[in-house]
Image (cartoon, rainbow, N blue to C red; front, side, top):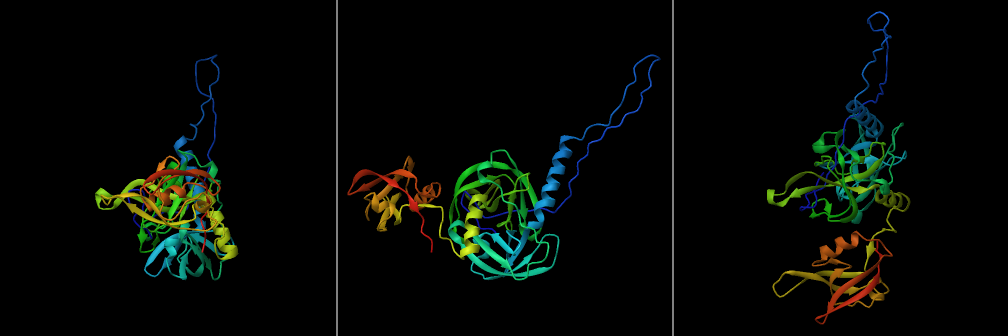
Length: 360
């Protein structure tokens, strides 16, 4: 399952069939003929090429992680998921589960279908958990990596069920970190704005959403969620630009959904306001106008009021509600920022200590 996303992204994920790893390092020697009295020479077999070593590494990762990646079917749509624990909990994207509460799950390297039901969903971070009704023996939970150790240039493998081709894999690198990306709202997409995402060049296609982005240590570093589209090409996929929700967000949200059935600590910054896009006299977006201020919230504590038009957060211009949401998604609760706004035609600033996004 995959939803298009304007120039910045479109939902997606990918996976690959398992392989085996091998390490080959051998040397043999035998006397070499030569002139009488010359020293004996030994010939050794050529060392394993770096290409073969990389191939072996890929195959080991696939063998390690692919059994933890599943295909999820809901109605006439499908996506992917990652086995989170041995109790049968599977983490995926909220846009994969949509409004459904029951699902069919297929494990890697098997055609047998398993029934699953919804545990809980948190659309604001586009994450959800479903649970197998009868977890099979030998279920293999994935290992999640440290998001803080993800670096540019690291090799990645994307695992999932692109276009229904279960247990598929693509390869690429980490192209960027710390991206803030907004999904378009509509269909099965909740329209979430997600910060700190991992950008990858690994190919991501419809059906990959909810699958694993993996490093060469066999650790899941993200859930593949978005693939960029090119507006000038009528929304066609932009090759080599995909985005994954980072592992730290996955584990934080998933643990809460499993233990509490809901999220009480979003880890997302908020101003404590209700706002909408403000337009100037030329009907162009010109800021985010505050419609209501939450009592005791960050904005209220800093003196912001309904009717104020926010035009900048720190040094980042804000010309719409979407720009405000995107900027806040890149920040953390407790951060101190300077908010530039207009009131009665006058430009003013306020120092605000950001609060935390409220959860349902």
